[in-house]
Amino acid sequence: MSRAEPAPHYAAVVAAAAEGGQPAPLFAALDKAMGAAIGHRLFTILVVHPGAEESQRYYSNMPREYPVGGRKPINRTHWFQRVLGEGQAYIGRTYADIQDVFFDHELIRSLGCESVLNVPVRWDGRSIGTINLLHEAQWYTEADVAAAEVFAALAVPGLMKVIAEG
Image (cartoon, rainbow, N blue to C red; front, side, top):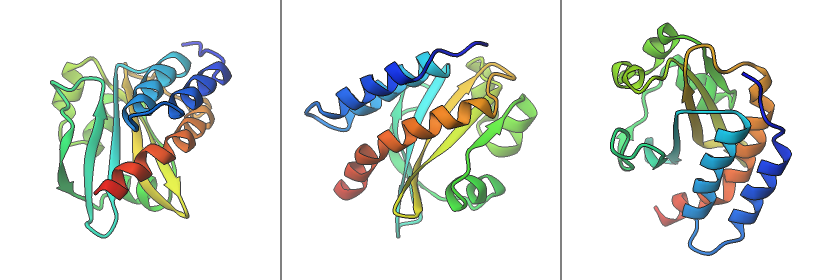
């Protein structure tokens, strides 16, 4: 489970952020870069709509299994408190961890995913969304968090555009 040096991948995301037609180029670059630097099978970006108490999947590398669009009410679980409330990354290393947090754990497992790294995207003292990476069991470690947090910071303009457009 060696990881690639993330710096060249940060540069690719920065370059994508300069392209027109945002946030699609930025989110696709994050998917590719985080896959190369950290690894994932399933990659999604969730946006939190402030005031509405709703979240929305805005990007998915598996749109058939995890379609984008539609809003759902925020469920204030221990996961919510850690990731969106406190702004701390969450690592689930096993299928039991996935079961504990996600109602759709059977679908997740059917995709070959038994570990997760959820990284909050933060702006102005609050979480505005999450970047979610899922992979085989025991894939993610604390060492992945620092690189993931830099990618999450690079995602801020894209999520802010989604929120502004409502």
